[in-house]
Amino acid sequence: MLLVLCVDLDDDLGRKTGFDTPVVGRNEVEAAAVALATADPEDSDSNVLFQGIHEYDTLSADPEVDEQVEVAAVTGMQGSDVQANRATGDEIDRVLAGLSTGENVSAIVITDGAQDESVLPVIRSRVPIDSVRRVVVRQAQDLESIYYTMKQVLADPETRGTILVPLGILLLIYPFLIIASYFEVPGAAVLGVISALLGLYTLFRGLGLETVVNDAVGRGRDILYEGRVTLITYVAALALMTVGGFRGVALVEELSDPAPPLVLALFVHGAVQWLAAAGVTSSLGQVTDEYLADRFKWRYLNAPFYVVAIAIVLYVVSGFFLNVNGVAGVPGVRAFSAADFAVGLTVGTLLGVFSTLAFAIAESRFPTSVEPTRG
Image (cartoon, rainbow, N blue to C red):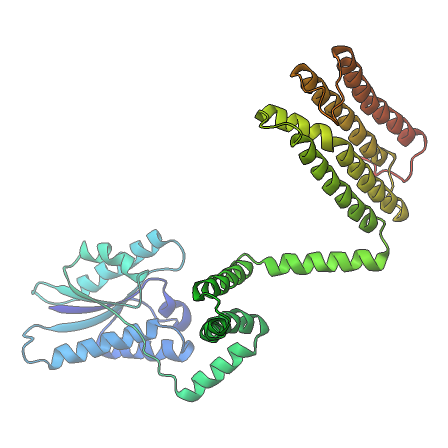
């Protein structure tokens, strides 16, 4: 006997139609398929049932098939695949027990996807499987549907920018090459520039950098409109850092082929004063904005003192290192002895400690706002 076995692993048939499963017999399976298609026209399991009926009719009408043919629908349960497979196995046992035949039974399994096919080992443990048919629904869309779908997709600004901009860049390659040939510009250079632009655009869109750029522009606009002092102090700090970088490089160039440790010491020694000025400027601007926004805390004033303390330590350490390595005579280098080194470290440390204590005392004696109570 050939058993056409329709599998519905998540029991859409039982849940949506109320049919008791398993369903055995052509008329019964057809009624179940119609009921499921009526309850949910988009459920692919109804196609599985109709495919099972089709296989049954085809095999029954085939004169070369000299076996009895039967069709049945079995279901599992929604949720765990293990429990669904066990429930399906129980229903297959009931179907096989209800078949009144002395012939050996083999099955043709009908499913609608890989998930339902996970039950195949369970079926194979009970009955031999001759074949497995997966139902794939073919849908035809006319040109009008395609036209309106494309129109709707291209109407979306984000999709339009993602699709049309790279396509436009690719279409402009040939005209750019023609124009470049008139000016005797190598075509490889044009292709390289266009490829770089297309690659940057793809990375820009792929990494979602447009959101970051929009947020940065928005924050910059808010800073301008709100009149924040940090806008000016950050620009000044950037200028000071640039000068400090050039100053450090210039000091490094005073020596010919210095060792890497000396390069670092020279750069720090020449740039640290400018970098400290940049840090103090930016931190004072931030403190001013916090004060204007009524968010000021005394401990915020620690920042410029910490910057100065760190700068003192770095300046003294780099000067002492250069003095030890015999670079004291280079213009722009201030040599520090061991005593100077100790004094510099002490001054930097005490400046940081005293500023912390002073502003902590000020915070406790003259609170700037009501601190939340911790429970």
